[in-house]
Length: 169
Length: 386
Ligand code: SF4
Ligand code: SF4
Ligand code: SF4
Ligand code: FES
Image 1: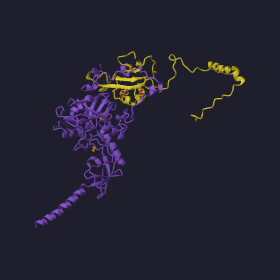
Image 2: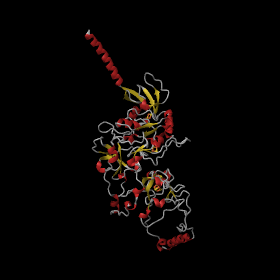
Image 3: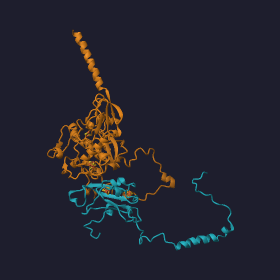
Image 4: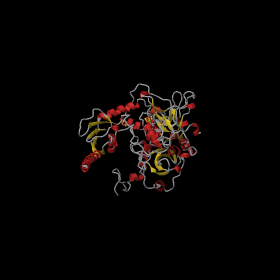
């Protein structure tokens, strides 16, 4: 059969020499590598107590923005959803009523807004597409969880705290 | 004596007839170095559309099915570098191609002329002077001719420092939404109302900078064919209230359908999500105008088809509409990619049926089976999502 790559080397199947057969030299060689690693710098960190330094452009969990008065920025224009390569975002829009002007910045708003974090690849295309500065990828690493259902993030899960009402934030 | 008169009359008649045939003969016109033959009396724009593609100038006010339209917006400006065979002098200024007839031997530059492209850029800037550019909120986004124009010919940013003119929202009936802020004064809707309905109730009020589309003393527009003003409006000034904010056009799937309607031909385009009809419009041709229906006339549709038949059972579906692949509306439709029924390859490879661990519809609040947005008369409000 023709070889798939040029790097494939034939296995040496000649009978073992005495040195190979007594096995100890190979064992010692292996142990020395293992023991050597004990004194090297550890490759892992004790997450979550310890975290690695993040790149300034790290893209983590999404947040939905509000303006200074606490009104939601998102106007359900669907640009993030059309920009998303993973088709993770869905939404449904509604018209703002006269008594909801303090809740939403625009005439139209996202009544439902969901991101399926199982699909999301954290590429940040949604952030770039948004004309209303409404969606940002924060520096929070996506938390792990036991159920798939918990990865469907609804609008309330992503909205930032209200600048006036939620003072603790 | 009498015979003699008859003979001379014959001669005269024949000469006239020959002349007439010559007049109705096709004449040659060269547009962007492409020569075509068109009947005399064709406008430069129609000739350029025959050439097709990018040679055809953009139009915002001209509408081939509406008599008298055109000549308002100047987006269709072209350069005439040779007037005609008889008078080869170029025309001194750029001309509006929708309102200028072709001459024999005329040479026209559309996309090949620097001057034209520059002028289009200027016209686009003028059209956007007072435009709110609220595309994220606007239901026309995705099929808006002004967006296309801005994308092809616009500046990246605005240079105007003056306040844009703004209007209070005005109610012009139960099914049509008027956003006067977005109007570009193309007069198409006025012509449409004039020519498609028996009584026009809206028009242009005031003049110059203050000109606006309105009905006199807040009448509502309710003729059987008035809904077509939505289709002729090149921007989002007139939109369908029954579709208002329901879905962005590029997330709906256009399919051609028909029904037996007594008022119109009943050949329409449905904009669907799943099995729900979100919007009904006339079918459009490649220039964004209402397409010619099977009876050879423009396929205007009546209000009943447009606003009331929002159930799949009202329609006989013919198949997916052909949407230009350059349009955002074609996104995610993967038209003509899958021909054969797909094989369940996954099951074949892993040797068993894959287990569905989660049905997204059990978790998601979007597209709930008990919320039928398409059945709501106007836009949805907070209580519709309770
Ligand atoms: S980060 Fe990328 S994949 Fe995730 S929701 Fe945004 S656009 Fe989609
Ligand atoms: S997050 Fe931004 S891009 Fe996405 S729908 Fe809202 S306003 Fe549009
Ligand atoms: S009319 Fe067109 S350009 Fe104007 S806001 Fe609507 S989509 Fe945007
Ligand atoms: S399309 Fe010719 S002037 Fe508007």
